[in-house]
Amino acid sequence: MIYLILAVVSSSLISIFMRLSENHIKNEMGMFMVNYALCAVLAVGFMERSSMTTLLGTHDQYLTVIIGIITGAFFLGGFLFLKYNMKHNGIVLSSTFMKLGVLIPTIMAIVVFGETPSIMQIGGIAIAIAAIIIINIEKEPQKEDGVTSIEDTSNGGNKKILLLVLLLLGGLGDSMSNIFDKIGPSDGKDGFLLLTFFTALVITTVIVVFGKKKICKADIIFGLLVGVPNYFSARFLLASLGSLEAVIVYPTFSVGTMVMVTMVGVLAFHEKISKQKGIALGLIAVAIALLNM
Image 1: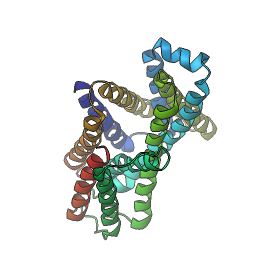
Image 2: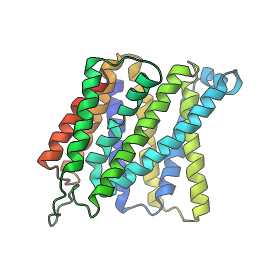
Image 3: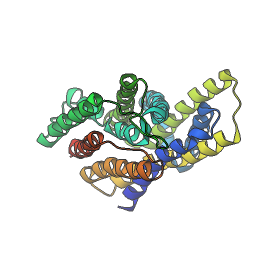
């Protein structure tokens, strides 16, 4: 259980550190580059010899390479949209929709891998769709003086679409991990994790170099702060799956992260949750739990 608790804390810290970085960093892509550089270093440091052998010398290493590269691109896209959404939709809704991306691998498991959803999973899909509708039909109230409101938007429709894009990218990233688990080499998980982070590192490095924008001290500091929980969130989640049933791990990980981020968003960042969005967030928590049962 300790690994699962650490996974929840690590996942929450990613969103919290990214939210804290908003008023300090000068080069957002530089922060991401430092983050993925640290993740790649940690991935190498924790890689087992069997994973390195699978990555470099076996006949099916191409699966690890291909899926790892695609996943890295989705991970980076999800990070960029998470950061952008936090500026316009707040840490609470952004992190919640990132977690709601579990809809994508669930649907893929049914359509691609022929898995039959349980009654609870079907209920979870229906509840999640209802929550999305509730959030998107709510009118945007005016901003209150001195208080940051996650409902304050000038282009409400466009900014809500950003949440759906975030859901899609987060879900596709999770789906690639599921695909690797289904068809990739069983001892290649560490190699897959390394390639995922290394791909994102290469992309961000190219963007930083061609962007010719200097990286300041704050970019490096927050990149390191995000990178540590970013890597260990994945690492601890894998460790918890080795000691607990998935039916316990996934609902606890998703809902636990959402609850922790919501508490920090309200208490530390003074984000306001309307009654309607509060209901929607509650429905999403139920949906995430049902989808993973």
